[in-house]
Image (tube, rainbow, N blue to C red):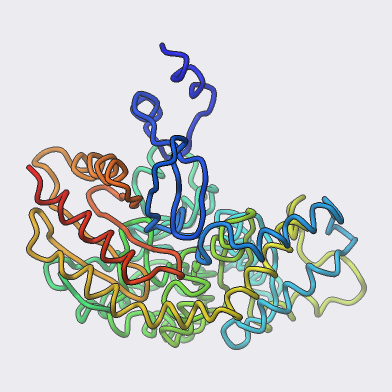
Length: 438
């Protein structure tokens, strides 16, 4: 083993084929604006916002300055029975842009923690209001809700579950996924067909009885499974069914939140308000790990209705509302507002859509789909070798100066909200050239 390979051996990398990567590593050393840079200075166009998270671009000076100033002022503050004023200020800022009625924020450190927190709040709420029999949770096939045991239990990505399949939390069922490629291929925006898939919730409730179900959790747009769009009317139908049976609806907006779809959150973009909403990623533009769970007033008030000053929810994290994360969160929200990045995303969405759909007809392209600044190009798999074509593409695009996200044989795009038309065209033409190469 070479000295260079040996220096990579100690780090067990997440969601990575470690042996393959360490034989041919894709290393990045710096980041500015829309680009990463390799240790030897080669420029890489970032068309995935790091990992769906760097919505304000890389190294924004106002965010960097805020983190640096906070580190110098106070490194850590506990939030068990103590409080840091900036944490309350950050919560107020977030409540101001949240969907109507979601005015209370519980801070976590990641999307995975946000999901497990949301599930625990849902279960505890049912018990608090005298519905202790409501213990069942319903997720969706091909859904991704992080990697905690709660998240992988309600999630529906097979590979994320199979190594731990004997340890899922009990009482979970799943809706069918919404990816009807035979009917909806090359849809621009929300696909036309599939609203009836929401009615499968009624069948699940008939099987288990509505009185046993605490909550339904879905991503408004399923990101990590390959950017799977909700059919027109689908999310509204889920909301109607949940209301009918007094079941909580949780939106996992870890990816779709903070401008990705051209609005504050997908809940506003699709005009469907959940009872609980999970976020992370764009919350701090990826600079410091942080998550936030937004909760409807009625849920929060149920916990606060107890007499006395006892702990209402026995849950929390050492690093909830960490001062550096709070500083990053506040500065990030200010950048979004001052620079109009959510509106900018909405304005760039048609340019992004046209560029992606220009790949229709290129070799092996079987679908293109998009909404806001979130899109995917799905490729036909090699016969008997699903995922191989995608794995090869991630190396080829990196060598050509482009960073993409691969899920199986699907290429996902989620550029920073500062993306320019020239960046979009560069990415699409780079991909086109690679697809056409033999």
